[in-house]
Image (cartoon, rainbow, N blue to C red):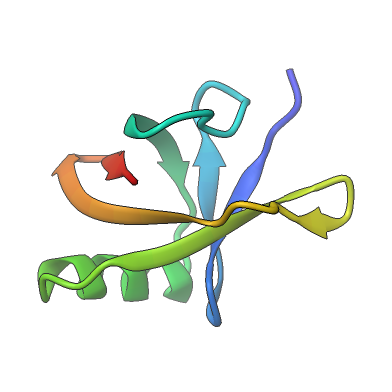
Amino acid sequence: MTQVDFNLEGAGPVGIFESGEPPRSNGRCRYMPYRSGSHYVMHCLLDEGKSARCYYDREGSASPFPFVLLSRMENSTFMIS
C-alpha cells in the first residue's frame, strides 16, 4: 500500500490518509497525523470555526480538486467537502 500525504495550503504536510488512498467523495476521512506545525495550524483553524483547505500530491503534482476539511469529528477523523 502506498502512503499518500496531504498538506495544508500554505503551511505544509499534515498527515497521511489511513486507507492509503485519498478520499474520492465528500464524507468522513480518517488519517494518521504528523507531529508538525502544519497539523497544529490546521487544528487551530478548525477550533476557530474556520475551514482548512488541503490538497494531496499525486505523482509529483497537486491534486486537481483540493478538498476542504470542514470539522473535526473525533481524533484523526474529519468531514470533507
